[in-house]
Length: 246
Image 1 (cartoon, rainbow, N blue to C red):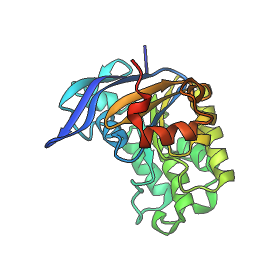
Image 2 (cartoon, rainbow, N blue to C red; image 1 turned 45 degrees about the horizontal axis):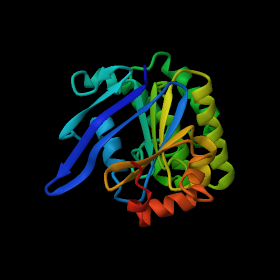
Image 3 (cartoon, helix red, strand yellow; image 1 turned 120 degrees about the vertical axis):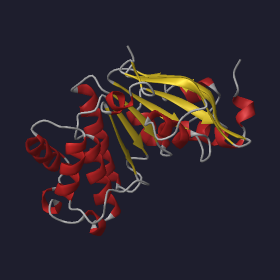
Image 4 (tube, one colour; image 1 turned 180 degrees about the vertical axis):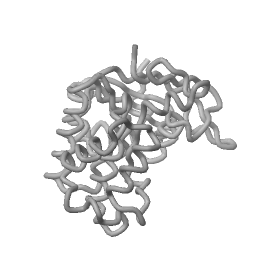
């Protein structure tokens, strides 16, 4: 059974079809990239997976649980991090982790917080308010929060966008460790194609709300006569009709 199953997902805003019949899955111990230019429908898709938006049509299950019939149970197995959703800035790092841990009913919460503070090198920031941290430091706290409940499904939207290369590499290593140490799955969005090629097992390219391409990020470019994943991304953004496959 897949950790995440999305079937025929559709979202319409007025006369605009933001997501148009999207279907994909994330397996256990798998990192899947959801790629595409701005406006392709990535964030709308993620918001529907999180239950923030209700689709006009389609079905989403997490661990086989329908998120619209049993939302709390399904979402309790999920967590999320994105650069555009900062944690409350008036709370300290420790307070944020504690509040979110309580929301997820994490057992042995104090111990779990200490593990995360150590893992993400946050000891010197534990009593500092998140609002005064640098963007990179806030990203590390957000990633720590996203793992507080040991989620089965981890949704990461541009997780390393504000990090320096060395810290971004450490984060990728931690995400890979998260995958290798359990049965969770990750849905990852990024505009950094070098990072995607390194971290993702499979990728899906969205264009105008539809999945245009899918496959192994290391071999997909050659299948479409492109030298790199970045070159393929640019082609999807500029000339998607030339890449459609039957």
